[in-house]
Length: 493
Ligand SMILES: Cc1ncc(COP(=O)(O)O)c(C=O)c1O
Image 1 (cartoon, helix red, strand yellow):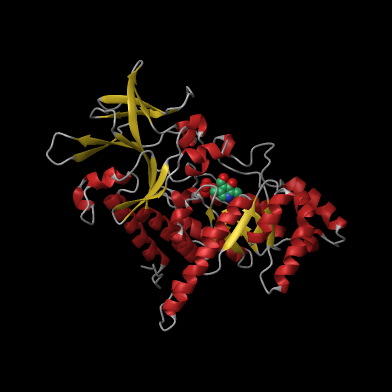
Image 2: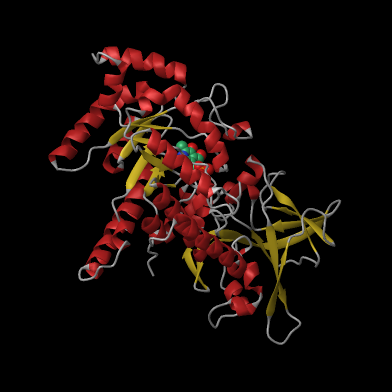
């Protein structure tokens, strides 16, 4: 069923959304996935928890469809209330096998290069065209409001720290916006872009818009590996370089002023300085952007506030985000604003479910899983962080088989403690330390929570370890969407 915005005030709609959020969290327990199904009464059709879990192979990333829908509806609400465009960052969330809702609720995708742009074209633009045709034929004789808006034209924004010519050829086929990390790269590709744009205009199509990524020298992100404004950062043009380069390219191209040059050659600006942050961080960042780039924002038709906005996190201040966007638009000629979150799209909407393969002892219990931190959850090592987890044990003592689901109690808190590690040769292939009130057994299932973003996209087959399968739980039914085999490993080497 389509979700149709009403004329209610944003606040009351947001409150409603918030209640939906709570309901999903309570009923389906978004943060703990299958755990919520333990009370069989929460299953909506005639399926037992045992059957549901038994249908899931191991290891497998399991998407909770309702939770994804919730995130997308909330993002759609924010875009609607603030009059901005929200794109999915494919680098963080690329699970295109369930992209119908992404097409419905978001404005397109932001891509890191040619392959992501092609994926966005195939799985957003083409899919959306198909949906729009269906909606249009369905809507022909009705006054059905809103539905067509969901399938409006989508954008494909591309940013890369540096493009190669071969990549640019392909990007030009798909992109609506191309963002450069230096004036030098823009200068190099200008002839290709101008020629493509002449073609597009001849065919009465929209030109590709061009932007520059700026570095406002302010980011609160920790640790430094995730901070694009650290000293010597290669991400975004710092103000001093911006002013130096814009002068020299304006004179190279024979423009009277840098403003004339910018207005004639560029359409927008982009900054990305956030990571898992609240809107308060954005509020503190915007003055830095304005301080250095005010006169060029005035000449832009759009500005992209990047990703890292943790909008779907329960305590995120959505109202502040909306007012920041509205104020910015008021201050700058109703400029179009993009946000491009990845993590917020896939936030808390799926788990990685694996199996305990062996339990050994060395100054404590060590459970070896068919999940590897190194291959399947690399951020556990890079960030580093310890995912929440729950265990699923089979109860064989009763007549009909049942399952017991238990949340992890924290490191060394419960009666039984375990270190979870993967099957690779890496000594540090450790997911974390966990404990439970009941004992863990070989063959038990283990679910690592909130694993849909920045995991699948980063998977490797190091040590010949299998790639986890991909599946979805929709209407209380598990569907396997992708299985990987030896070929996938062999083809990569
Ligand atoms: C330029 C850019 N945009 C968007 C994103 C998405 O960020 P997030 O997934 O944290 O929302 C990233 C992530 O690194 C990025 O580098």
